[in-house]
Length: 351
Image (cartoon, rainbow, N blue to C red):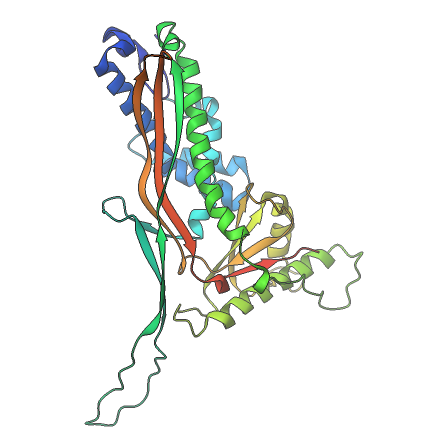
């Protein structure tokens, strides 16, 4: 009998009378929904984050194995999972490190608000017996609606009758990949659509370093990264985001810049053992394949007013189309996201 990665034992489906049995169809649908949620489990999330932060498939594979080694759902063969569905390790979830997640899955809300609150609050000495000054809150709010995103998948009933279970599972695998890519793309599109207001030109080289020198480009890159962090801190210092020189920043970059950014972040003040890096701030990279502009990158103060909300994970509903002799599975996701403060983002040039 065929042992699958979605339905662990298709023989059980056959012993129940096959897909013509409503109970067997319910069981297959349940298995499919568990499969669709697999990328949200710890091993897959660890692997996808490792890939996003390094651009290295080997690092993703290692993280996946290590996460499974400490998980209660350790499979019979980790290598079998890796070899058959190796692409599942590389779900692009880098955007999750940039946006603040609001979990609305157990609510009845289909929107959320991003507040632009200004209080003008300052602390001052209060003489004994006097009252502290009360400041009124002011500002606006932006309401972000959550939208439904869906797609359908149809399997000819003949696939089940002919026991072509590998085709059914391959289709489901592609379906899951496309759903994840779609959600990631929506978030990256928000970043890439940010206006040019806070764009930063490629910073000049420091010192008398000719353009032919091997360190010329990385010096300019690290100067640009440091300047971007500095600009964000200055712009946000009075907006109530608790920013300081130790704040965490993310570099969100197309995968084409992996080597270049690694080289810049590794620059040191002097080439001797124990010398400090030229990076002045707490910065870590994230790489993606989903930007249309493959040269520029973004320095971002993550979360705060970069927000995303999830009302429903990818969920499949199924039915049978008697006219097309097709079992239909329609998957739905329910989410929304917005950028409430563009001052948290700087687009950096590389030339």
